[in-house]
Image (cartoon, rainbow, N blue to C red; front, side):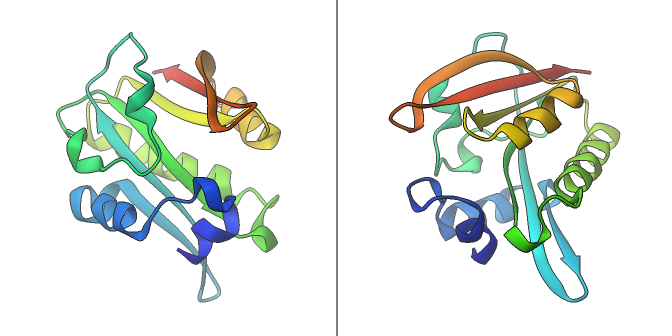
Length: 156
């Protein structure tokens, strides 16, 4: 939770019960980054049934993974990634993202990946674009008024 609160504004931090539900439901979909004994980053994911139609409420903050996750699905949803400030800009987010993606594609029948990013998070958006993600939808005011959520998807 230290990383969650250090990575996001208070109004979009997800609760500890959400993180516990992610771990209880899909432990292998959560990776943490530890450097010299300091846990400094994490990434979490879910597997969804693929749908060409983007349904806004599937991306709600604080949703329970147990309501939608299915290992029989084919779309990997990157639900959250956080890196403590002092470790940013060193490629650790890209490392977590790459490691999780490889593990999930190897183990499950993933044919696409999807995520949501704020219009204000330019660095994150650039990482996703370089990884082949394309904007497919926007959710007005998702993060706060005037701050849209950009849904990005990559077909494998």
